[in-house]
Image (cartoon, rainbow, N blue to C red):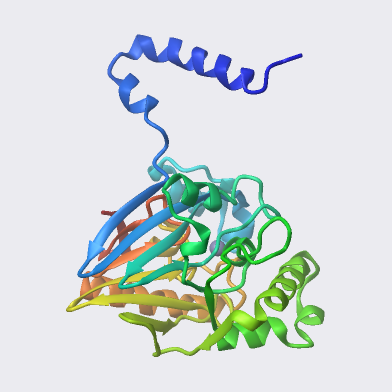
Length: 312
Ligand SMILES: [Zn+2]
């Protein structure tokens, strides 16, 4: 019988053989993939965990653009033009006696390349029972479905779950399933079934509210009707956990006017993106994008033709 893991072992040997030729790349390549990265902001400690990545067809992400325009934007970044493979980043905030997660990852029932959050938390020594609050940006599968474990029980047994009221109302409305296109009906069924399990732990929140000490809810509708971003403040500094209101670090930042198939209201999505990019470029505060390249934090600059994201 073949030993479990023997493939990994032999593949690793092959890799090592190849790397030996390149010499200097060896040490860096042997380091385990960086699964989290931390930064401090006043008394807040912020760590970004990887939940893995998604694979999305480009004609879904930017349905109205020509292949030439897409290639002109993405090829200089060394990116593929037929699919997008964005990372998924879950932000953890330690502040006072709170341990807060922004979104819950995909869990194990969405794309197989995502759903790595529980393993990454464990590796970092964070017990799921330590999480005091889970704050949701919106209820799409890659942000919400990880709220339950493989037995459909809450994954974070002690956590309060903070949900934008408008998001809750939209997904729970009687007519939402009927009004949703066939290919997205599973999003509705998935959100409804998870909301049902967590209902008695949910606190509804509204834009402008200080939802936790130093954490302000910023209404950013368009991607979904109740989408919310969160500004973490310390004195005059802040970090914006933007969720999917600026979804992708190249397409959404450099071409905010391009309608996105991942936005449920494409025009409102554009307006919200431009408002946020203006604000981030003006105040130079840090942004963490859920689908930006891990570890997902950086700043937005205004350029001659638009905006640019620089990781930092
Ligand atoms: Zn997303």
